[in-house]
Length: 210
Image (tube, rainbow, N blue to C red; front, side):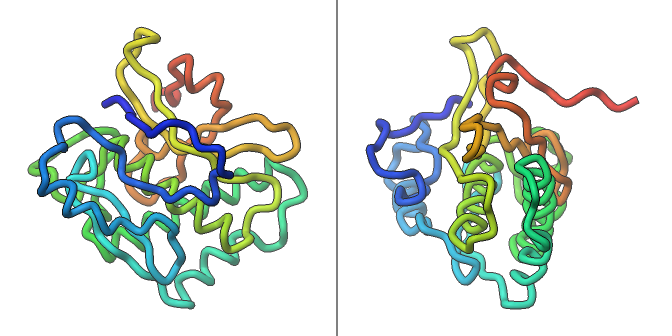
């Protein structure tokens, strides 16, 4: 599904509210009403996540101090390089998916768009890109990131001859290289892929398992 974002803002991304991805088929009033209260500036105490495919449902979630401390500990000691911090980010996203999954019923989310029964509790790339962006924003606002900053969601698709796909992203503050943080290829609670955005845009996919 194609990511339809608002025009670029001159504000730093950290000061722009995160919103559910806007789909044309969701123009009806009921969707607008149900998503109006999406928490655009997430904190561990209160944040929103999308699920049930293409943000069909939004749940408000909170983490207690003990749960958020588990996330904090993944960034201790502070990474000595951007590469090490990307490994920490992978672990943190995986842990947050597990914690949130226990609260929202998304713990059984399958990799990609595999459905065994219904859409309930399942995430597509629109959900994954949004939720991972929420998690990255929380890491950034809680001063857990030293080598990176969160960046807007982005997409690849028909214009480049590929199937439509969305991802969250980060920027290496030293090299200024942008990376995709893609959770969609993996089941809930597994670390996302973090790959150079230039590679991701060219159609990157994980190597098939033997």
